[in-house]
Length: 196
Length: 157
Image (tube, rainbow over all chains, first blue to last red; front, side, top):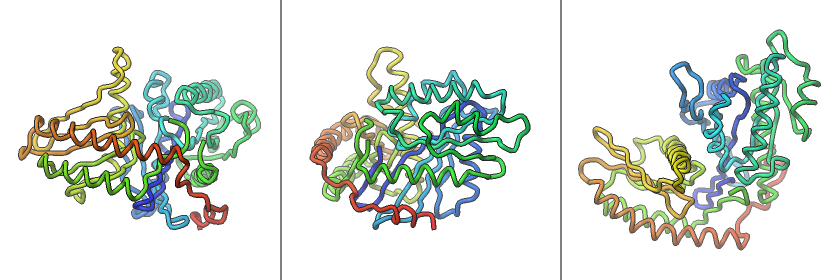
C-alpha cells in the first residue's frame, strides 16, 4: 500500500526482495547502497545474525526525484531467505507495493527457488494480496558462476506470469539497477491505476 | 490491507501535527512521531534533527510487527504498548486505531507513567483523525490521476 502525503508532497512505496537463502537479496541492496549518491539514499540497516545471515530484514530508503511535484521515496526491504524464518517473511510483506523475486541460478538451487516462489504466493495471499496482480519482477542472479540453469529453464519454472525478468550478478552489479528500475516502473504504473 | 493507498491530506496532517505538538509538550518528551504500520513516517514533532527518523519509522514498524507475531503465538491479538528502557533515553510505542504507531522518546525529565497517561489521551484524538482519513479514502479522494508514462520515465534520466 503506497503512502501518499499531500502535505509534504511525497509518495512512499515499499519494495520487497524475496527469494531463497543465499540468493543475493542483501547483496542487491548493498550494491544499490554503494552506487547511489548519498543525497539519494538513507542509511542501510541490516538485522542479521553474527554470521551475517539476514535475521529479520535489511532496509534501504531511496529518494528518486519528483514526479508531478511529488517526491518519490522507495523503501527497499529484504526478507530472511532461510525456510524456518517464514513468520518474519510474512510480516515484512505487509504493505508491500512490489516484489523483486531474486532466484539463485545455480542448478543445485533450482528446487529452493521453486519452493520460495510458492512460499511467496502463499504468503501474499495470506496478507490479502492477489499474487497474480501484485507488481513483480524476476531476477536470475549469480549468472557469473559455473553450473547455472539456463534462463529458459528458470523462466519455465518461475515465471508463470511472464513478468519482466533480468539476468544478474549482484556481486559485480550486472542487472541490479535494471531490476530496480523495472519494479519501480511497475509500481508507479500501478499507482496510476489507483492501486489494487 | 492490500487495497488502495494510504493518502494523507493537508488538513489531517495538520491535525495530526497539532496532537503531536501537544503530546510533546505535555509529556516533556524529546521527540514524538507517528508511523504507519508499514514503516512510513507520517509526522513528527520535537528535536528530530539528531535522529534518523526514516530508520526509526522502519524499525518501529518492524518492532510492532514482530511483537504482534509473538502475541498471536500465545493467542493475543497484539501487544498494543511497548516500552524500551535505555540508560539515558527511553522509548514508548503504542498502536493507534489498528493502523498507526505512536512513538515517544523521552529522558529522565519525564516518566513512563506520565507518558502513558498523555499517550492514552492523544491516541483517542489521533484515532478520530485517522477515521477521517479512512472516510476520505473510501470516498475516493486524492489518487494521483495525472501520472503519465513520461513522468515515470523522467525519474530515471
